[in-house]
Length: 254
Image (cartoon, rainbow, N blue to C red; front, side):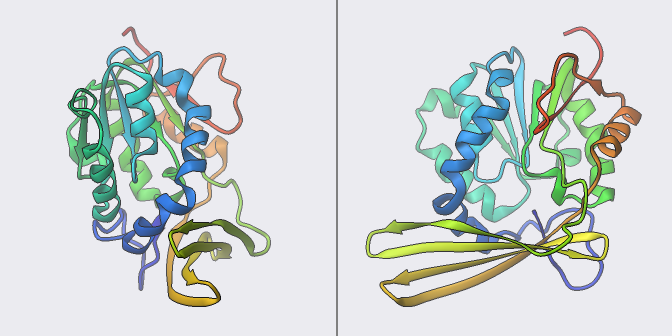
């Protein structure tokens, strides 16, 4: 997700963004997201023979799944310092043999200078939060980072603006004497979607802390994303029919 800022949105996230969300994400959403990424991408990652590229790694759900399901090197690209800190803390607990297979790149992919480093790339929960200029920079960088014949799997952005506010409550989680909770609200804001996340920590009925972080999302139809990818040399992956994931390949032989 791309944080809301004052004035016109910039083309890429601030490295210091996600300071609030990084604290709450793992406790409130990570277990559910871990199951989801294994379901969406696991069967492709297990077939990787060169490397796996995790674009927008966050706190590491795709990265950890890739280390567990494959025997190849993993490249985790995460420019946001707060999320990257959580990712590195998690990697520090892994056995040395797994940890030695993952490289964390603290930049956007177009600045990471990766060339033919992977045959599977995953872009989970990221594309929706990139403004058009950042997407335009991303596709050629993915093309360069993938070996010929490699596959890009991405979670597509919302196709349309929400007609009304959409509210989702995050399941509360207990940590010792405290209960952590949150609520996500998505609303149309011009041609973008504003996502506000309210977090809280309670002890009994007493609210100990409350925090809010807001993000922009840019909707785009599936056809629009496919057309953009086609202009950068990608074609649809044959035989892939999961509507939850957009799968394309860089033509050529591995």
